[in-house]
Length: 154
Image (tube, rainbow, N blue to C red; front, side, top):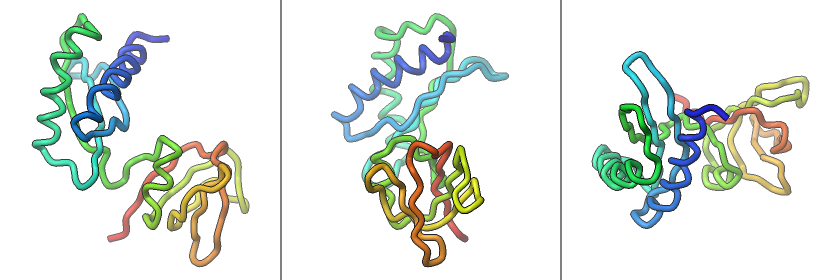
């Protein structure tokens, strides 16, 4: 396992233990080298909207803990943010949470001769993600989903 991925996994575990007490959920953690140097990105969510103050609060909560528990030996920039309006759904429980939202799903193998489906998310049942594609209900086995993002129409 490479060093960056190992650090991201440790940070995810630590953040997942510390942030729920403050009302936040960890969505994802990235640690990567960029032109400006190493960047540790933590994506968070909560009920309601994520504000700049929420990001500052989470950065404050985690900065001391990370220095002690993860011991990243290279300088890095800590960024905390929301996953955004077109967030990727990475966990099964998110499919229930975002029922009624528009979604775009890329699959590992085709359904109805398509590897990309868009529609309105109706939920998850028996390991199938259910979407409504213009009045047609489509069940997509969770196991073949490569990537799923919320979408929005302007």
